[in-house]
Length: 283
Image (cartoon, rainbow, N blue to C red; front, side):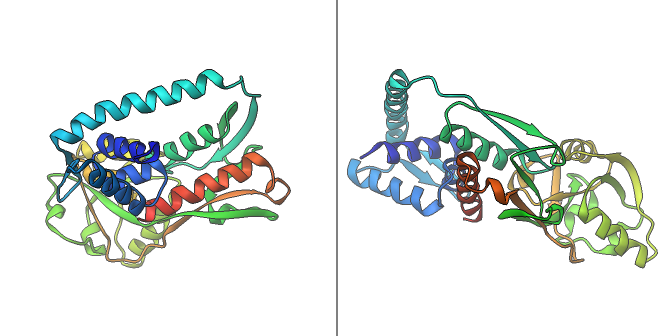
């Protein structure tokens, strides 16, 4: 038994599933599963009941969580008591919109933990910055990049809308369908072109700029909206998510940085953290 195994156990307990814990810890799912199996073998008991969606802690799991949390907190306190005040490190990270709160939070959390003293400034991607997380189509000449995510687009539908009965949404379904237009959005431009070819007029009920407003308006029954296929969008009671029959190009998001900065410690660290998160999100 070691602190790594206990850390993975605590993450599974708090996140409610092995896959969510893997994303939280920025590791592959098999690593978390193996650590749990080793713990259960060593303690000779089951720590979780495996459910179709997620896990439920057993009585032994509840007991271990209380002790494991204390152990991890105590170790962190010991390390903190011996650490010297770090030098401040200014880092400007440019971000496009609609990156996904959960996955970006994990990257930024790990980035901070790897660089004590980091003072992170999140800015618009067209402002001066040390690195940018952007659509690959926004790359500038001379920039290096590392692939992060490829996002498909789905249609978010109010929970009680008749279209929820369909497995897929066709172009014909967009006739007189109330829509929330979110810009900038590459998928919206593609959908608009496809509708125009079929002489279908988009029934736009609201024009907004953020995913949060789109979700709120869909949940309120105002209309439907195109959203990136984030896992968090699938578990909302106020709306349903459906794929489209028409092929919309995926959005490829990358971490971009100047070739001159590729060996800078902060940039190298961010690349490593982003790569781990990208791999974990595919499991």
